Image 1 (cartoon, rainbow, N blue to C red):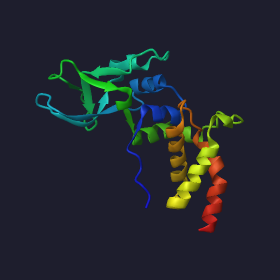
Image 2 (image 1 turned 60 degrees about the horizontal axis):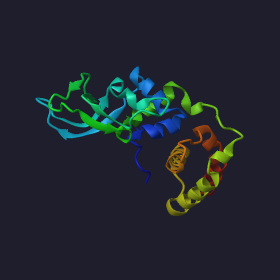
Image 3 (image 1 turned 90 degrees about the horizontal axis):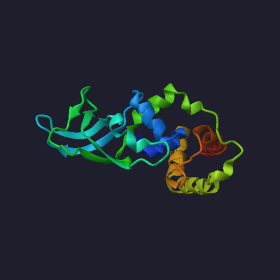
Image 4 (image 1 turned 30 degrees about the vertical axis):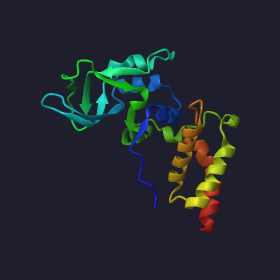
Length: 198
């Protein structure tokens, strides 16, 4: 049985997936291309207690996204917008704000997929053709063999491509990962051979 789709991506995962910087992501979020969200554990806040996922106002924490990399890795929120409503909520009972780190900031998967569709990212040409040494393809092939041995062939090729992208995200020290087209080109012959033998 296949696992359900992912619910969210960290900003680092999105940056690797889109081959961009965190500053780029902050810029796109600041003009409404998608929300950057964080998880809020249940906290009192006047007549409107808060819990669950809430959008953050990127301009409130923009210092975390300096292109030169010198910005802080933590900041504080004084307002959030629960995902099920349009209005921002002031954190009136938290004068010091709520502390967030870069690792706490997420993009919901539906926003990631919509953004990729809007920008036609899934058909983007490979940006590193001819320079495959930067990626651990041998390690990836070993993980594929182990995956097929232990769990069989995935239900769809798209699911397999997603697993391989996630493997590169987890193993990459630089944050760089191959784009989907490059991964699909390498997987397609293997996929066809395995499906024909099923």
